[in-house]
Image 1 (cartoon, rainbow, N blue to C red):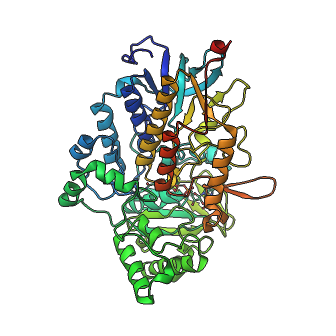
Image 2 (cartoon, rainbow, N blue to C red; image 1 turned 30 degrees about the vertical axis):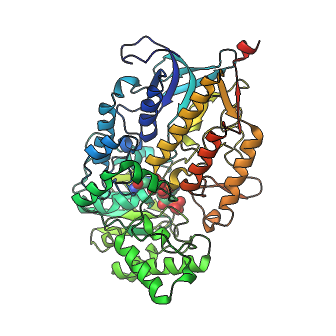
Image 3 (cartoon, rainbow, N blue to C red; image 1 turned 45 degrees about the vertical axis):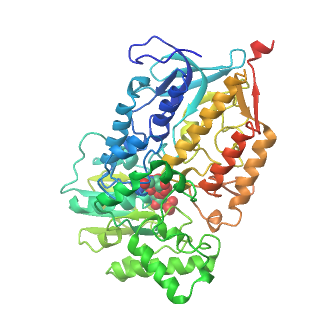
Length: 549
Ligand code: NAP
């Protein structure tokens, strides 16, 4: 085992035990955890600071949609106890401050090369190492390569015709510039009404002279009911951090539910159902997904929840035509990620806000002065693109990782991702994809999901070394069985049939694959523990080709 990495800015060290790509939620904890194992670790981060998505998504209104007391690290009770969240749902500046605090507190920054992206990695079987090239021209190597690059980090680039000739300014919400962007008094357009658009629109409307929202399809959104965090609630949460962590990991998404566990719709009387719907709406947030246990698999039950939310939209939005345009009918509620907002629907009551339905009147081109749809032209000064990501495999496909056969990790994913536990893929020794497809991933609280994946990876690396091996990869049969069980878990879901970034559609026959594992983080964690306790059944361990020879 090589020595602890020295200051990366001055070190001439080029060979590491582990290279971790990305210094967001997963990468930071990975650097800490693997260093604790005594491994030499280097982090590569293309941005100038830590934070990952919370570094880049600095658009106005950016805020987490999982409660702050759940959406933070649990690995260090002292860290949990010392940090005081100010709001129920932390805003991007506070989240970024927290992640900077974590980097400082655990002295992680010196292990990271900033403004340095992984550009190429090649597995060398004789040496059982990856050679790694960076965007800055460094030549490095590592025994284990950990991709902590996230699932929603490769932003979809706007490719609207005419954009290059636009004389105003345009920005991508997910790569909001660090420099100030003038909002006040400008005619602003937002394209996209997913979680990002829904958060940005109310804040932009407050400053714009006029805001035009271009909506292709409406999404369901539930009020966050954000506000200052009650000190008593924080103290209670911090009193037993390991206990709170255990309790969260016994839930499907590691998100606390104020309503408690849900029973199927049929178990409640009509009055109880209405009461649950109203109470969940009043509590706000992702819990609207858990009013009834069967709302994700039974269309009629789902309709009851969707009708209730559509009723709320009609109550809030004064213009009935606008309200109707905002009501989703093309997908069951919760089949796309539920948006969590502050005053989203009420924003459409403002005089300076216009909703354009580009589902019915598509954008034809961007002109020098604005946006041209089939039927109208909208003059704007600033365009904000909130059009989503190349989810799950986008960040992997942006870099050139090759095995000894010259294949890329996603080479065999044409019919959907193929992974073992959403962490490794066959043919790629010693490559770990944190929170990858086939793990609960974006369906769960991403901080605890990352902690669990890093812990499992740490166990796997330790097991490899302690048993005198140098490589680990999934066994093909185990990967096939896991991929099948991921598909089976999703087979009854209403959301499998919905156009969504979580669904892979096969080109040849149109069949669909739901990419994250929907069995719940609770079940998933149990499975991972059983695999570890069983000596990592389903993983094949080996030695370098050179050693074997
Ligand atoms: P998204 O959910 O994929 O939404 C993208 C939006 O852009 C959709 O309304 C989509 O319309 C529209 N769009 C895409 N291409 C378009 C085009 N060519 N022309 C017009 N409209 C177009 O992306 P997102 O809003 O960035 O959210 C992605 C995920 O990131 C969320 O589900 C969530 O997991 C995460 N996120 C979390 C938070 C948070 O924690 N609060 C905040 C932001 C994002 P269609 O629906 O018609 O395709």
